[in-house]
Image 1 (cartoon, rainbow, N blue to C red):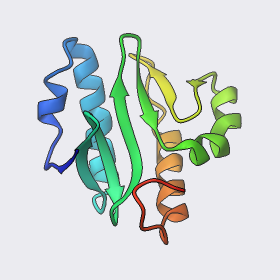
Image 2 (image 1 turned 135 degrees about the vertical axis):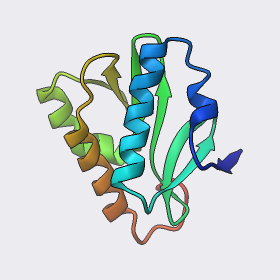
Image 3 (image 1 turned 60 degrees about the horizontal axis):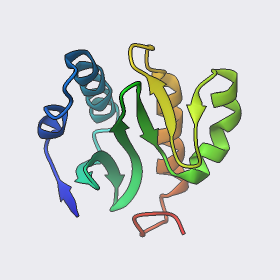
Image 4 (image 1 turned 120 degrees about the vertical axis):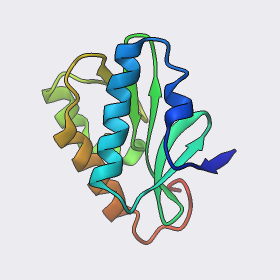
Length: 127
């Protein structure tokens, strides 16, 4: 279920560790400020950002990290950068260690890539 939201406070309040909650809040706030044209939604119990109804980026939390999900095509595009920066990643997400100083430059590149690459896509996910 997808729900447009004005902020992610309800989600953030579910994160028990205050330092983790604060760190992810800063990341979500940064995305909101840098990309005000993106729509904030909650879907699959995760904060996400969309552009003209198509998925751009999503976030989730785990004990040792938070994950950034830019979709598999973006993971493939940036996997060399992830390797260079020694970031753990999977088929559809990259993991940022808590307290590890979020790489906002890389985050910006992934978001900009998805906005550009999906400008003519009307589906939520790439096909």
